[in-house]
Length: 441
Image (cartoon, rainbow, N blue to C red; front, top):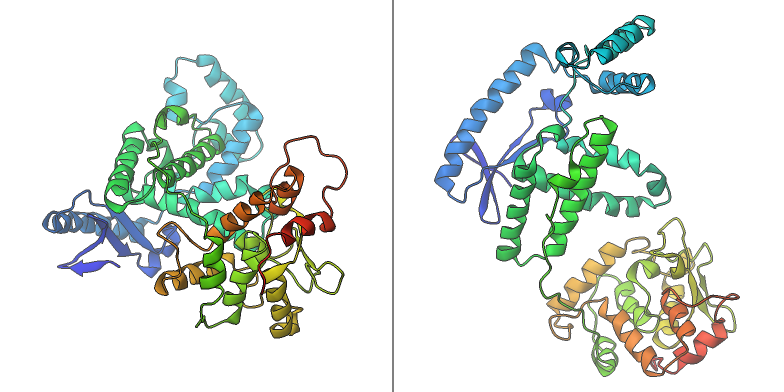
């Protein structure tokens, strides 16, 4: 949260100060976000106040200029102009660049094309008379979303949100460090400064290099798409050359021991707001499914089948979630603690056909709530166990009874590397091996 001090707006992120100020409502149309934020590049509060005061003076002058003259950049006109240039085989140049260029043939070709072009705007585009607006990095995500429209169309709203969030974070981080500058003005010094900022965070905040590298990748792609869409011909690869950071020793998530699951996790007197949270532990322990696969089960849509000789669940794409990979689509027999839990869920959530009613389609919410509960109630087995460790535990237990590789892959939704024939292992075959490790509840 920003702190206003003697007319300055400063906030602290980690050890560094940043300038942060809400955008006046009457200027909202000129800004993508409802606040302005920029790195002050200092960990001294006194220096931060001095720099913030200077930036406030600059910002006030800028807003006053907009109030009088308006913002005369027009992205829509520019985009239309680019389409005209592409159709005519030209690149964008200003009128000054066209006139002063040594390529006189280009000048002649443009004049001839402009004479034939219909409409004043087309003539202006060809002769370099349309103003090129600043394409700010802070606005670059819109073009990425448009570029990935086909991929996003196959995702659920929650999956789209999860896809957007890390990209929004990456671009926001870049803006916080380097400012919301025009994409074409970003140079190697900016990407290196972003790298230094991430290096400092990793050292002081115990973050991972993987987090930094994801940010670099998202910003790089946004810049590449912006460059391609606006004919900027930017040296994107050079800007990000050797920018990635090397990962240190990666923390591994450990499995829960079998007796710990049975004697501690199952026996604990859960004081959760929802009985679904306790039952989720039982389901995951004897299915090994991913959290999103279980919270995405659509009982009314036929994903949970209990009234049959071999009760089972269907892991498949539906309106609540997609699948991580193609092999993730599978049927899982319900045995042991998982069968017990789904029978309980069918009873308490009868109105929706069973399954997880409160957390339907809310994998992140359930995972965060249960992981927090585990920490607060000392239910973790060492520091490197989380809710997801139940999947690792299930895999270890299944591997211990040595099922055929095809059965193992089919249960877990992993890719089977050999040539595949037929429909794969049946429910009976999978149940045979899962029964060997099922908990007695």
